[in-house]
Length: 188
Image (tube, rainbow, N blue to C red):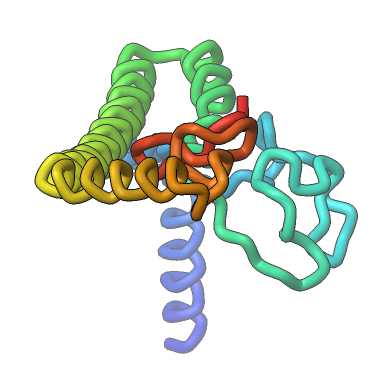
């Protein structure tokens, strides 16, 4: 009985090992943009140990290496992984593989474009804030025009009476004086 059980077990295991994997079990296509920069892909640089690559931080900014982990920006990851994606696309053998890689590349470009548009929106917000500050300053100076001109006339009167040097007047003095808007002159 034990002999029969041993023979059945041997036949069962050998038949399982001899079976080929099912044809529909395909290896998933890896997204080239999900891979880290320095894993042997193009643009990574050779690792010399202790976290320092041969590129010495040129692509990822200084400060990396020697135990200091510097996370690369999304744009640095994109620039480093795009050549890898192109290589994989060149080497792709099936239409399915090409389609998947093109989908990954398109997603990466979409994400990069979205980041660029967000940066532009931030730039516009900064410019609007700066413009608002400049307009406010201009309104303040416009409102103070009569006071400033009155003070300048008083200074001219004092200079005419010999109580004030001509070079001490705003906007009248030689190099290094102030113009009528309070800006330093002669700095060109």
